[in-house]
Length: 237
Ligand code: C5P
Image 1 (cartoon, rainbow, N blue to C red):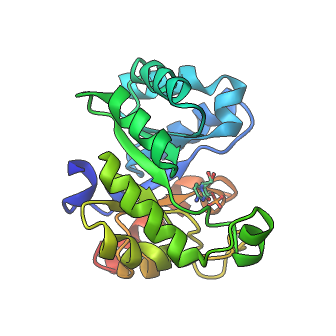
Image 2 (cartoon, rainbow, N blue to C red):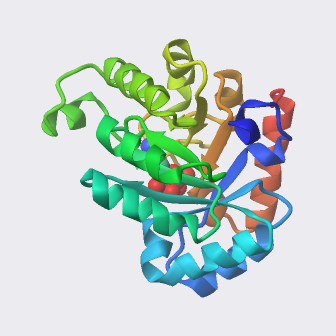
């Protein structure tokens, strides 16, 4: 994926998750972060609170919008969902790493510039949580399986923990690694069990970094974003 795989600016690598409760909060946060981050991510919380209109507005202003809707359904429903997303002008969309859903999404994207990103294994899950959900394979094996399937479906990237970026690229070199679970040194890890600092993530091969609470929860989100960009740049990203 051009925007991801070729070297981009350190700022371009930072995806700010607009994980806030209202569109008004998100508008304030986006206004504070414009010019400091490369991409605005809109997930469940904001999308279900009216945030898709903001997604369209940000896209119309030329901002890169990442719709983290983690699609998974029967093929026809996934395809129709992707068709509707095309109308919003978002640059990125996430789909769970199930082969059938990824194939359906890729077919529905057609020749549009929308980049498709597979969810490998949620970075909040550890082996015990996966086993409880019925997945008894080791995490690494599941990531390999889903990365191969994502590449075969024509996807552009995989969401993975920073420590898994090399694993993804070993089996699917065409895929970019999008890594959440980023915690600047000294910050609260919350439930991200496989977390890394921005510098560690870049050194581990991450292409784009998703950061939520370290920015949204900071007293000054713009400064927090700038510090993360500086850390990315200092690590050679
Ligand atoms: O607040 P925090 O930095 O943990 O936010 C991480 C963001 O990345 C959230 O918006 C979350 O939904 C998203 N994400 C994740 N793990 C994945 C995929 C997405 O944490 N595997």
